[in-house]
Amino acid sequence: EALPVFEAHLALKRRYWSRNEYSILITQSGLASCLADLGRDDEALVLTREVYARMVAMFGISHEGTLEAGLNLSNSLLRQRRWADALTLSGDQLPAARRSLGADHDV
Image (cartoon, rainbow, N blue to C red; front, side, top):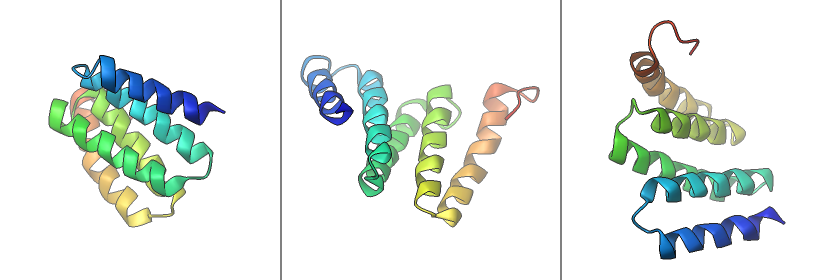
């Protein structure tokens, strides 16, 4: 039941708020999560990769939103048992998270 709501929400944001790319990415992330919950892991992974790539391009790897998108991508990779890809991504994300969040943060 939630999938059509996420799809409609995303369509509205793209049509009426196309300049707010960050908001669109957050909605895409929610849609990807919904797809994963429905067992549509391949579609979720494609969308999650897209969100992460756009976040990196917009804000850089150390931005809090990018770190969260990277965590979502890692989870998506793990759901598909793509261990090596998840490990590589985590290897890139951990140093960025430590730099961004500080050494005292429980990363």
